[in-house]
Image 1: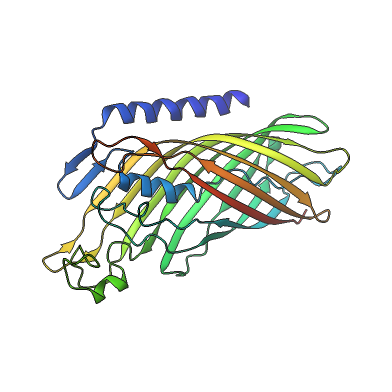
Image 2: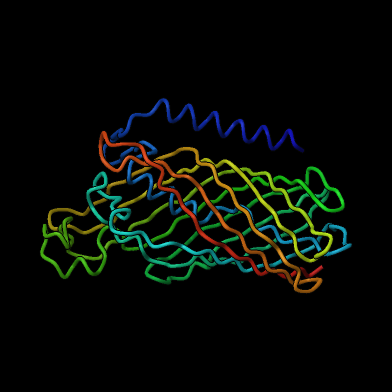
Length: 309
């Protein structure tokens, strides 16, 4: 099993490295723009994709209970989505335009884990496709995990995961911009109507997980995880402007690393609460020719889970 995890990690690393070396900052194909992974627009896509990574948040195994085929654990996950200040929200026009990206303050999604043969478990998660905070998510995350080494008090595990789907909202032409004249600081894009932009937040990743059960507090399980991700982000503008209907399409692809650390606590033999801190370094050049800086994402996530069997 460790060879599977290492193989996935090496493939992701090589693929993203080759891609980054081969691509210039911007390549135009008609109305499509392929962006370098460190441009402000790309930073915005990888920032919000990272908020939905299916990493960490391992619910603990019930005390003295073996993992069984067909076991089902349902959960409700909530992740804090930090608001971006005006400088960090400048992810349009090569970092010159502030976009309306501070929509939802939290990401909430249900999840389901199912025990499979050979000690594997399948994981699926996704927010309901309901409009809230001005956005409509249509995201589906999935994963496969398995312990690599297990001892009485600790275990080392592996997870591979991915996500498909998008989020729709008025990012480039929000409602508040329509109150200002076209070309003014409040409406630099000259919007004449609310946009219906679509951000695709696709990724594939793998991580290793380590957990340790404290003998004096057997219901408490600290854990850490570290992984690598290949993020494939796209942004489709759908904005009515004074002179045209903007259908610009931006896309980028690259590698990120992420880590989590937290604790799980068995409230009962079936109910558990897991709280994790999450961090991923995200590199960006805010201006053309400017310095390369790390503007990473730090947030806190929680999972309340119930094991049926």
